[in-house]
Length: 127
Image 1 (cartoon, one colour):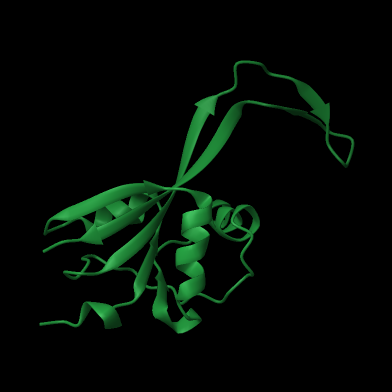
Image 2 (spheres, rainbow, N blue to C red):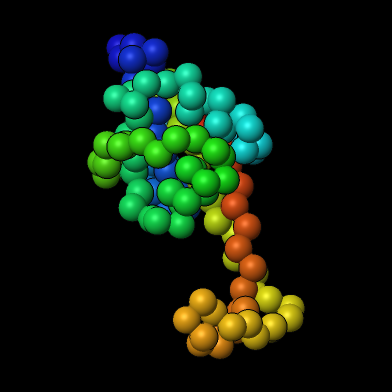
C-alpha cells in the first residue's frame, strides 16, 4: 500500500481535475483563498506536482493568494492515488453585463466582454 503522507500534492485546474477522476471515490471541498494559501505553505517545493500549464491559473496562485512564485514541477497525471490530495484552481467566466470601452496603455481602445472569477477546491481520493 502507498504511504499517503509521502504522496505529492497535486495542483490542478478545471480540465486536469477531470483527468484525475478516472477511478476511485473522492471528496471535494470548496476552500477559501486563505485556506489554499495555508495548505501550499506547509508543503516544500519538491512536494508538489503542477498538472496544468495555464498562465491565468498561475496568476491566481501567486498574485491572488499572495504566495511567492515557485518553480513547480509539471507532470501530466491521469489518476490520483488513494489518500492523495489536490488543490484545484478554477476559473468561472460570465459575460459582462456592461461593455465599457477603455483606453489601454498603448492608446488602443479595449472593450470589456467578460467577468472572470476564481475559486479553489480541495480534492481527496478516499479509495
